[in-house]
Image 1 (cartoon, rainbow, N blue to C red):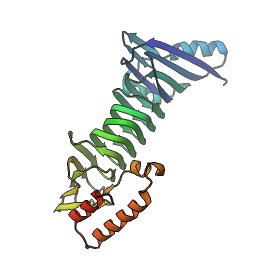
Image 2 (image 1 turned 120 degrees about the vertical axis):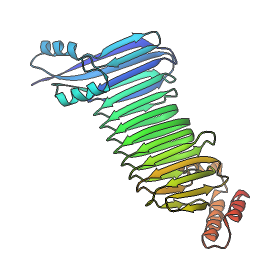
Image 3 (image 1 turned 90 degrees about the vertical axis):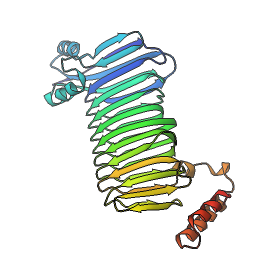
Image 4 (image 1 turned 60 degrees about the horizontal axis):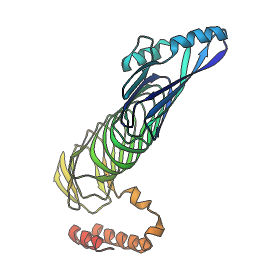
Length: 321
């Protein structure tokens, strides 16, 4: 059966801080932040039909449903299976047409809500409140900032932020990798995937990571107190630290211990390291880095051998070694 391509373009003025909602199935979605206040969406369909006329007729039934108003735009499938649960039903129903791709341009500061089944989602440049729900697809967020709320099932999540963020994630069967200059709040729940967080931790709000079988890797230069609950969880730290408590309740203290972090797991391990973002700073901006790095290695080696205690190690590091 021949395949026919049909395109649906949608434009609506929502304003710089308006709202955009999108719900699709079997589609790869790419969202790009823009200046101004207009949201533009292009949906591309591949339709299996016996003729051009039949493809046109089918396209009319497959066109995305649009609801718009002052400062808002909502786009979803219109076949009666509305909402996130309905998109799953459509996926299982085996329609003869497939929505291959959706491309979106929207204001960087808009309130964004994206729900996708069986497709990857890429978003870049957004700074406002963002909500993502993804089933059976990877989620990639780049050049991000603002408040992020993520639900993911059977897919990996990658966040690369250029501004401080507040991050909430519920993840089932997938890994999470997050990198940001700072986290104003961190709340992560993961069932079977590993969690990697890189960035400074704010001391105002508490941070919490819960896993069932996934490991938690925290890369930061922040002074922190990590409360660890888990009978079979190992704790490793490449930073000078103190370890208190025992059995299923232990406390890892780094520096002044200002940021509060709770880590709970059935069998996942905790590893604390220095932020990769610091390591990626260009050498030209730190001309004495090689010698300082060697001195740091010597200090940490002396600490590990028991030649100096934690307080002395921290003093030497703070003195510019």
